[in-house]
Length: 325
Ligand SMILES: [Zn+2]
Image: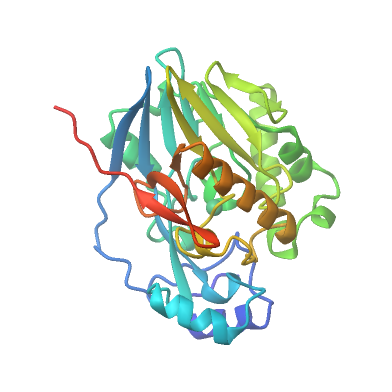
């Protein structure tokens, strides 16, 4: 099932028969992933009374031709070259985060499943939590923006034990999608193979599952925002405390380059690519117009910054890394 043979993987990807994203090989041997012994990472900042801690889960790889799927090669290649995006594989970071509201400790997304080939350079959530001084047992709530394996992955191995007292919150649309008896017919082929693992997480958590509707508060100050397209039930989060606000985009805005310059460029991993374009454009516009602080799950760590309108698109403006004390 797994293959570390890069050529075979790319050939399969080009033919559209690539293994499920749940089974994608790491390509680690083919790509320069940086240090051999990665250090865990965390970065904290305040949103009013809340403390937000970004956690580095690591990096993983996806084929370049899975991005900008509606763009001709003669337009795509020079753009990707100019942005140091390799012609065969793109490296993505995974950035879960914790919000400490002073009442509740809320983890948003859980990274990749440690020990899998896809997570050869990821799956470091536990180490990064430890580095940040956060006990997994103190997490009250895990929120999933959606159920792709780079977001639910940290729950797959031990759904009830990884965060032993935590409830799991996700949109009811997302729960219904993956938990449906005919999930395979509602999911893209590459995602359908992962549905059983997701269902097992839901079954193990039982009454600790709390599906919500978009627009509802997870706790006071943290509101779910429906951002469908990447998955049917994908949610982003709007965090507000005092006069501060933070938009957690999840995967509605995937990449700091092409998702900003060309929100209309489609992505294979979006279940409904046309809806995803609409959602991405609307969310970018909102972030820029309302001057919101933004965090992105797949942005270079820590992935905190602003969205600026530029030309026909937008530009990612990273925030300074501020160290208190
Ligand atoms: Zn993702």
